[in-house]
Amino acid sequence: MAKVLTSKEENYAQWYNDLVLKAGLAENSAVRGCMVMKPYGYAIWEKMKDELDRMFKETGHENAYFPLFIPKSFFSREAAHVEGFAKECAVVTHYRLKNDESTGEIVVDPDAKLEEELIVRPTSETIIWNTYKNWIQSYRDLPLLINQWANVVRWEMRTRLFLRTAEFLWQEGHTAHATREEAEAEALQMVGVYRKFSENFLGIPVLVGHKTDSERFAGAVDTLTIEALMQDGKALQAGTSHFLGQNFARAFDVTFTTSEGKLDHVWATSWGMTTRMIGALIMVHSDDNGLVLPPRVAPIQVVIVPIYKGKDEFPAIAEAGNRIRKELLDLGISVKFDDRDTHKPGWKFAEYELKGVPVRLAIGPRDVEKGSVELARRDTLEKQTLPQAGIGEVIRRLLDEIQENIHQKALKYRTENTHRVDTWDELTDVLDKGGFALAHWDGTEESENRIKETKATIRCIPLDAEEEDGTCIVSGKPSRRRVVIAKAY
RNA sequence: GCCCAGGUGGCGAAAUUCGGUAGACGCGCCUGCCUUGGGAGCAGGUUCCUAGUGGGGAUUGCGGGUUCGAUUCCCGUCCUGGGCACCA
Image (cartoon, chains in turn orange, red):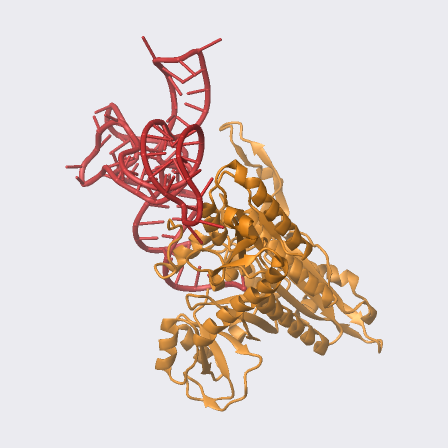
């Protein structure tokens, strides 16, 4: 097979880029740092959206939509929030162009300057809380559980397809609650939804935990995160859920009358997951032959490739192919019968491997004769010949097995690359090789800054960390639990 | 935003040293033949636009400059890649 991709071992960044481009997922656009998501990449995103949306609704949330533009004044009400986002905002200053008579060029009309600039949302807390103010009067209006599917813009200095683009797609949930406890429970619930989604649907094992003070979302009281490990040993923040306390309620004056008739500010959360997950999916599972998609997220779960010499052989093969296709469709399996005669079988094999299709069936004259079919699974690249009769059931079970196998493989990789470290040397050793280091930390910013000098960061303070006496890897001061340290994207 | 390195067909690129026919070589693509159980092979074509077809025009990110002549030298600018920083 002609080599299509750079090898992962040769150059991980190049391999990733090749894969995104050649599998037809996305490409860089003419606009600085932005991305064109191609149909196949978008199909993967749609699968993710459908599943997440289902999970949100299952937990009582509704979808709504808020404006793309945020007046500058809204944006600056919450001090920490503006501080966090000010450096990466796209700003609309004018509303009209005109033809410059001297040069004949289209220029911004200086007379069309906006009185107040508009910020293209980098996140929607401010405009949403400005709206919630009008929606919430009484404890009877709470909780307010809303999610929005949208695009946002953050003017990043350096960009990378899917992982960091100037514009990206995401969902952002924004909830309002009557009590602190309820809001905290919501934030915890939603990080749990992300964990379930990531592990069960995408096959990506994640660590769940709190961010440190310095890594927290701008304006949040607590940030919960899921952290995944990529095949090059770097961590990726895959989703976050924030407990916002009453910060935004105070900034936007969102108050309600309690059941006791008292006035109080509401308690808030926000949580988001983005198209970055597509990048995670690629970097966690794929190999040098291309994408490896877990069946649940694969836009095409089974592809059928006919093999034939001359036109007379085709009808019998097409009959078998279409019959199997129908059988799989009836079982709720997405299947493509690629009967194009413009590409040869070997070409198609390579193509669908590159696209990560979990199961491939090949049907040729031999199979028609014997009532058999060749089945190849993408995760292990194993091939076997099976009877056509009952193939639907076999594949239905196999898809579950592949889903599980891909998850277990990723989990095994993460386990093998997670190390408990008790000395500074052990820490730097793990960080050099790549992977998660579990180390004691005294909770101070000084020690955290020292860790950051290695270019690694504290990814999270795990939720389920067992209590354990130890001493901080930096200061030697006492510590009650280990934190997760890694180099990250 | 700062420090490097770059920007030439659909793609990887060559020519830049020392200014002198831009696109060598390869991939891909197109046509035909031969093939079809792993991106096979052979021949021809392939920068783009245009043309009643023995032609014409444009073209090395973009804008200026030097020069008889600029992909090459100078200034500016935009963009891309790597590093710092920032970040989902």
